[in-house]
Figure (cartoon, rainbow over the protein chains, first blue to last red):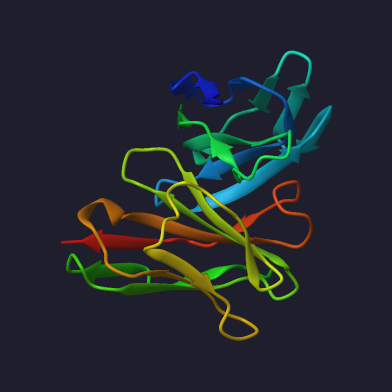
Length: 111
Length: 115
């Protein structure tokens, strides 16, 4: 079965640190989504990528299609960035599988 | 800013009962989705809906589940005979353009507890 793997599972860092969260997947994709899940459970879409790099404020997402890998970076991290960050992919090849989600990276930014 | 809304926020039901979870997608969006997240587990895709019919569904979405867009604004998920293992957070989402390769906007979720 096709899988999405995220690392690390848990990450604790100090305010101001540069954060990197990784996502790798097993076969070709047509799109990759980065999502943020707040402690209360709500989900916010951060990025949708099919190639290259996207930036929004302090968040940067990159994808390397050949290596089947994506990274989410947070610059100048802040305690309000504490959340679970989830990678989800749309497999290419015409399947009808919706999105496949990773287990998430639980990020805590300490003041 | 437009947002996806869901009601109720929390539903408690007895095993075997029918439940209907309601969602109001963003008004100019064309694609609608249901996902679920069992406590402590990853989010799972259930179903996508476009042009008044199901476009994709997962293995989880069996005959006890159904979706409907009964009017121009609501999008519902019905579970006919709830089981204990249906207890989860259910998220509705919508997107304007092509399914899964456009940004999806998620509702706040409905927590379903089956006793």
